Length: 74
Image 1 (cartoon, one colour):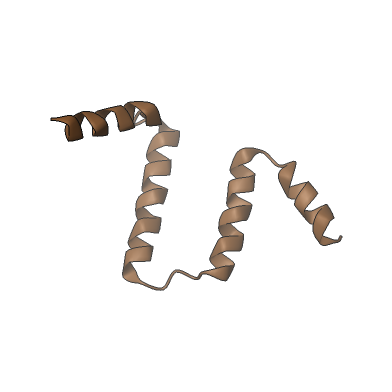
Image 2 (spheres, helix red, strand yellow):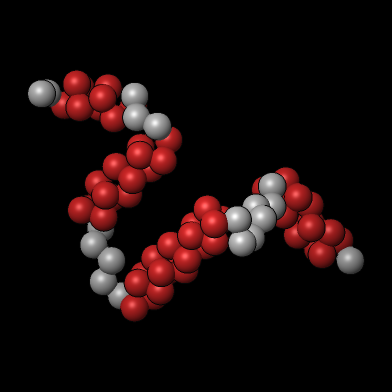
């Protein structure tokens, strides 16, 4: 399999699997070394678990930014 075939195959994957491939490739280039990186990874995994389990509700980005801008306007 050549590089282009690999890319084409990866693009055909469902979005979550593509994200996993991208994450794995990036990790191979930039190994997390610091404690801060490890804590961010743990936080991201926890948040993903919470979203998937339904224990928290996702907030659309536009609503988040609307709230942020309201704080700056005060």
